[in-house]
Image (cartoon, rainbow, N blue to C red):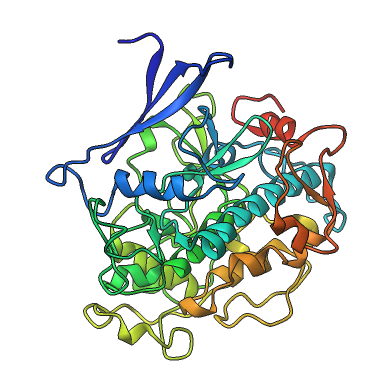
Length: 430
């Protein structure tokens, strides 16, 4: 094997290798190379590396990848897998006064707010300027640079609204507006309409639901797992598939959950952030896990549901939406006194300056009602203290210029965003 290269990720559709190289006049560095087949007989639709390269080359933004970019070893998934990334200490000796944000909570909010804001900048640019829907937004597809800059990656199943037959001639799997693939997105991050066979849908709304699930994961519990326990279902947010639990409100979850049988001293023990929904056991279980949290579809909460091709093929137990807050124990404790109805699928016009309000507005059934990224950038939570921290090398854009009244920082407690991220990644000593 070439000592100057190393496979860092090998999935069913592509391989990512890091290679040490240099350009004329530049120092040697590691870059990431993604490779995949261009043979239709071997490729799995709709994964299309030809279209991916075409879309990436068509435009650029500081928060998404370019055709040539250095290797970045950390992702939001890594950050979420750290027990340090929480407003709560792992060991607590009492509830204490939660009406005032602790220093730990403030650091957590600064990090969460910065990353979520940058992700929204990337998606806003994709949707409004590039007219591209990503269709696979999830924590592992959001990389972090050493300075704390977010990079949205993996456009292998992306879709562009303005593509025509001439533009897509060389694509492996061309898509048109009324002949789209619904086999997109990943597990728990899939929008519910994708589970019912649509060949025509709002691809941008797919991203908005995925944003909601991804952002919710900033606040779900961290669970201690080990290699021996990985085959055991420890999903808690929709704890059981039985009828007896269908109408029971969820018990508040703890920020840190010790899985039965896992010892903290186990060398394979590690913290894993729960997903809001169950995406590991197929589409039927995923649909049921969504319905148990957000309620069964009906004419009020999802008027267009019956228009989906497979809407009537399966029947589920009738269940009501539950409050999201008990499922998100890592929400900032100092903001928990602010009351919010998260059971509704028609959020109030008045936005509250709390992250729960932001998450809720993405997780509504009717695609047209989901919060747009452009509007989310103006959410009052981003305008509230602690102020928004951006990377010191962040390239200014018209998006920032449009946000009148927002306060931007490049350091917090004398630390840069990159420093704060590195201090919260797994392996760092608290």
